[in-house]
Length: 416
Image (cartoon, rainbow, N blue to C red; front, side, top):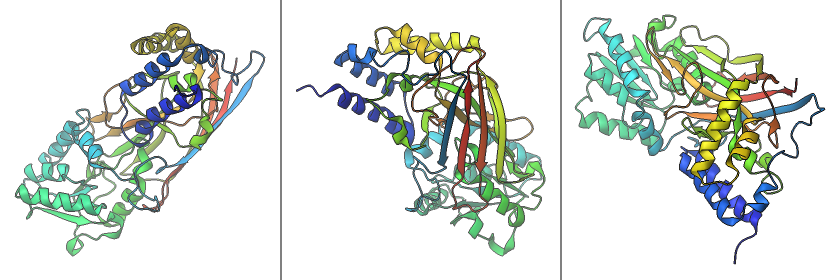
């Protein structure tokens, strides 16, 4: 027996959301959902399409938008109390294999070691991971000693095994626990720290609290930018249109049940397109650590040329799934607002930056980091070129590493 349409629709959307919220997504996942819808029937699908029932009416001036969540929402947690983000093996593998990240970190580490006398630098690796990859890089390239700290018991054990197999157990010391609870042997301090503890929202993996503590206890010259790799992390943001938000509408799907938990995208995923140029909404300098509460107000203006380009991108994506009326659906989606997309950018040293999306346009590219999209309205809000999206960012980043950061974005879409 064929299941009722809403049930099949819910199954398709569930399959699509699981990797986006809890892991790494692929475009084929969404296309599979679209193909499943096409097999069912296109007639009920069309009735859910333009214009969305809750979109801004022609005579309306403003539509409120908002979202709020904690750093651990939808992610793996190191503790059952969900206080700190953790990773599984596939996530660690994705990090190491990220060609837009790992080679640049290696080069920055080598550059920093070459700037000093050989065998003179004490290095601190915060969040070394199961392979102690950057700790090994430092040891191979002339570090005197490397203290590699890892909070996960399993990852720390794996790191010890890796270091022993590679013959670096005399040079690399694995320390298990949160760095905020650890004092280096003999009260030693490091010449520089490697701290790849950067989330898809830059602060969500506890970087602020970790660096704040290391400033006071673990580094020789913490106010010197050369004491940190990276020395600055930022979160960029831009309003976005989301294909599935337009395809799956009430009563078949209730987006409010996400309860603020953002959708997480592969940074190559063409199902999300930006409506305006990105801006920095979170900026943390490790040498000048500053305050943990970051607030910003801004107004984005919907870029009509981006909307036109997005119609083409959405049409191509829908055609891959052999969806009927692809251009009509793409036009509706491109002229809609779903939420504010967020992603990280890292400055490793004076010459090396790591981008998870293309800089400065915010275009798609391959990255192990994800694009984070809080759904800010139950249904897509209709927009056009020149409309304004006024938002306030309120990011509360605690000084305690086991207290998750909280994020709130609120504002209005204003039709002009």
